[in-house]
Length: 311
Length: 285
Image (cartoon, rainbow over all chains, first blue to last red; front, side, top):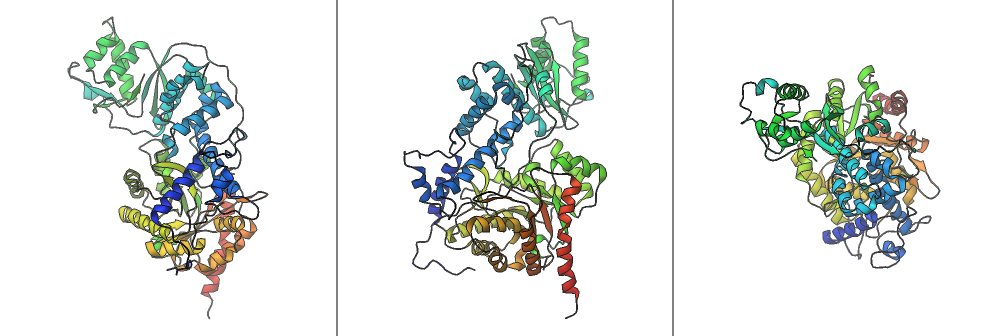
């Protein structure tokens, strides 16, 4: 192994290594300025040149600040780029500047706590509810879109459980049948017809891959503008689901929405049907729905507690 | 030397990274390729299209897993849930070995999703080696660690990068994924001779090599993986192959990805260097 080359020099301890990583991490994950550069002042108001010079070596071409700034910028470019991939509809309805601000504020409050960037946007719908000012005057539209687009992330690669078939239900007492929806599904009540809107807007493609390559361009420079008329309000019920590993949006009506959400909250089939229909004379319709839904593999045996996003 | 205990005694030849824009071509045309490298994290999901495509690829091709999120140099505890998911994938792909980077990227449970250089200190080497052993013990397959490209250096460093790499792999008793392009990029950014690096790593531990393109800016070089391999990197690769023997090699092309044929053609340029070393070795003394 390598012999001691640092005679007389202080040797770093593990605790010091950890402290150094905390400092470097805080510098790298700190929000950028409006010009997409490293902020010039540290949290204690010291000049960032002084702060970065304490732990990063300069070279003949770059100062300590300029060297660590490369990582600071790449951090934000990478994460916001991932946001563009997962929330193209939100980006379209908010516009570039407002979307970038929302992403910056959100990622500052909710930095990634997972080894995968797949989960980066999981708190965004809740964040928008709490920070309506960031998306006004399109709060309702943005709130719906965030839920709708996060549902697609879940549907893309969320877990599948063994489906319940029609045969499994035959001859069973509806008062005792309890079903869950597949964990990858979301049953949504939206105030806008965002399914149609997103189909018009979205280009085909899958999530960008993780790699150790980096891009120099900020997200502002690397995206093509795409325009589509903002939809008018219209209550819409939609299931975001997966079939043969492709993503689908399926429109349902209000009764079907009530039925599915009741089932998923733990109601028996009998109670769910009662909660969905004021008029109980719809057995043919219900049979038709269940035939379709079981063919789509939507139902699985009851899990503990609701497993699917509804709302 | 190339088939060794660090790469599961494999001699894979020349591979390319499996990337989404090439899925359709690969699955429909079934081109002849020695092997594909996958980014593990892209397939550590529960279900869906990524795993369907992977299974189709696995029916036809040898796949080797390469990760970007183990962060061997971090000081956080290793995420057991992440390891469990990784082990499920290892069993699915039957990868002969697994690689990830000599870097850190998370602290106090927060992830940067970047491959950050660690200070080259003995404390860091011990910490990194311990984590590599822990991961290897859990996954029960050989591990090789890749040198990263970097743009910053720490005052705290107590040795050169290649000394640090040596310290880590000897303490962990693991192999090296020698990324020749990364050595070139870092040598330009930090002002060292890349051949000092190539000459001073433990060659017998090299289990695989990476080559890639980079981008030169006015004041630094960026590891962009969006170009063909540049001449200085090919020269270094030839030198590395002479030192290490004909080693499994992978071309990385991750941005501005051209057609499958173009990427594969670029990768196959490595063949002449591998053949030259093989012929030299075969000649009678």
